[in-house]
Amino acid sequence: MSTPDYSPEERERLLADIDEIKSRYPAGYERSALIPMLHLVQSVYGYVSPAGIAICAEQLGLTRSEVSAVATFYSQFRRHPVGRYHVGVCTNALCAVMGGDAVWEAVSAHTGLGAEETSEDGAISLERIECNAACDYAPVVMVNWEFFDNQTPASAVALVDALRRGEPVQPTRGPATVPTFRENERLLAGFEDGRVDEGRTVGDPSLLGLRLARENGWTVPQEEQK
Ligand code: FES
Image (cartoon, rainbow, N blue to C red):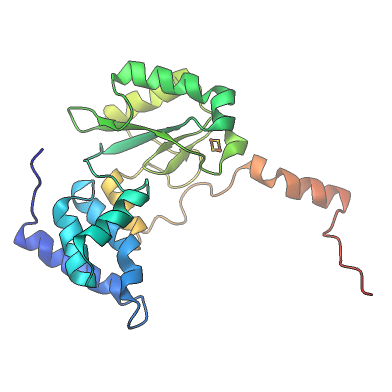
């Protein structure tokens, strides 16, 4: 795989964005900006490229090895290009028993992709993901980190087909349509996309305990004063 370097225009924009990210941190603590900088880097080519590692190291006074160590520790950072739509099927314990394994088998067979593989047209990549703290909606599929709750093999295959056709697809919670991987990576770097008020932010199962507590007058026990 060739490893692209940034064009002068890309580099100029990256450096301006990196300056903005670094300015969010107190003087002397700029290296804390590494995580959002890696998301920014991913927003350019859809992965953390060697050129991205180099620019983070250069701008933070770190070695490339130090930056690589962080980029390889967190599973959100990819070392190979992902698709416009990065599809993650949760196969962790609860999702697995609720059908996540069957969802994975169906999507993998339908696309011909295995874990960490990207389609030749660059539209879809596939990943097995760990728990996304959405167990009350198991089995869960994520596309570019947006939630698709209560999936079945058939619904997940239909979802992937719609994404491949370039149709606008609405997550169960979150924005009105799924942003591309690169768009969401820029958002994760801290650059607002103006869509924060779109869509549902929370689903009924997450609020069930609160509703039952209110209906029954349950409150948090107070500590007894001695
Ligand atoms: S096990 Fe899948 S979201 Fe928790």
